[in-house]
Amino acid sequence: MRSNQVRLNNGITIPVIGMGTYSMENDRKTTENAVHMALKIGYRHFDTAKIYGSEPALGNALREAIIDGVVEREDIFVTSKLWGSDHNDPVSALKQSLQKLGMEYVDMYLVHWPVKLKPWVCYPVPKEEDFEKVLDMEKTWFGMEKCLEMGLCRSIGVSNFSSTKIETLLDFASVPPAINQVEMHPMWRQKKLRDFCGDYRIHVSAYSPLGGPGNAWGSTAVVNNPIIQSIALKHRSTPAQVALNWGLSKGASVIVKSFNEDRLKENMGALDLKLDDYDLLEIEKRRKCEDSFFLRLIFLYSIDKNTFSGSNMLDAKPSMNKTKQNLKTIRC
Ligand SMILES: NC(=O)c1ccc[n+]([C@@H]2O[C@H](COP(=O)([O-])OP(=O)(O)OC[C@H]3O[C@@H](n4cnc5c(N)ncnc54)[C@H](OP(=O)(O)O)[C@@H]3O)[C@@H](O)[C@H]2O)c1
Image 1 (cartoon, rainbow, N blue to C red):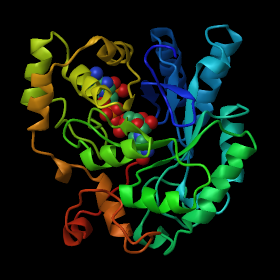
Image 2 (image 1 turned 90 degrees about the vertical axis):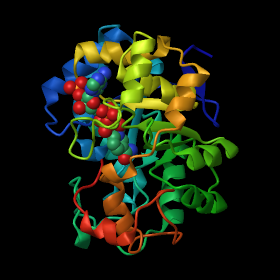
Image 3 (image 1 turned 45 degrees about the vertical axis):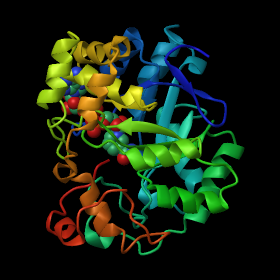
Image 4 (image 1 turned 120 degrees about the vertical axis):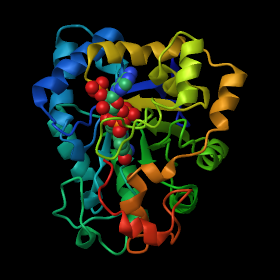
């Protein structure tokens, strides 16, 4: 196995640091430049989704790099995701993504959320009336397996699934998910979900591993946390490197977004850090700051309306009333 990779339950390997490509601006040139910088720095794992609108820019930059001999297709790992309005036909949705990417296959195709949206909802902030009442996850997963069978992707997985939802999925899946991509960082540690996924050999991939600072849903609570900062000082590293290395130390891969050359380098530098037991214990003692993340709000709201198991989507949840009060945005 190449270094800095983990092997998934289907035998395929995935680089442990992935570059996220969601940006609110979604400026094609900026994204392309960032992907070229990332390739030069050593990133080989790229995360996109239909709803990010970044597939064309990512695909174009990767194609250019392949033509220029910077990388070979086999050396990169590309993830895309099935949006909530496409559950009826994952094969067609993936074919459209591949067309935008200009690729013959992706390495990973994920069910973006365990919720179903009305067919016309192709914006990242759905309103209450945009949600379908029922999600037939068995049908969706059958479509995902079809994508695999047709060679449109090398692996399939899920995102934002709770352990209960995965357990239900496993009851009918012929191919188990290889990955569950969820929000995870030192302030939202996903212990229960990690343990569950570990039992089923489902790899956990951490998105927003820095807590998404600067994003509408994000927060600086991770990078500004005094404990994270003091650990960074101790190791002569940076808070971002500490947060990323914490995720890696838990066996997760981390999907971190930066379009800035220095920060792309800094984030890759997380691989060189070695947190000790004391650091990990200090982080473990931190109170979780779940309430500061908008993500759960819209989906906790939606679980009553759009569920395939009747269970909570996330393992830790605030009360429903609070959820409704704070219903503001969706994390994409
Ligand atoms: N599956 C899902 O539902 C889901 C949800 C959310 C995100 N994702 C994926 O995960 C990726 C990353 O998540 P995210 O963007 O929410 O959060 P993130 O990676 O934790 O944070 C990104 C933000 O942090 C800044 N940043 C990057 N490196 C930094 C550093 N070293 N120090 C300080 N700030 C830094 C970035 O700005 P600069 O660009 O200016 O550096 C950007 O504003 C997304 O791009 C997307 O691909 C998936």
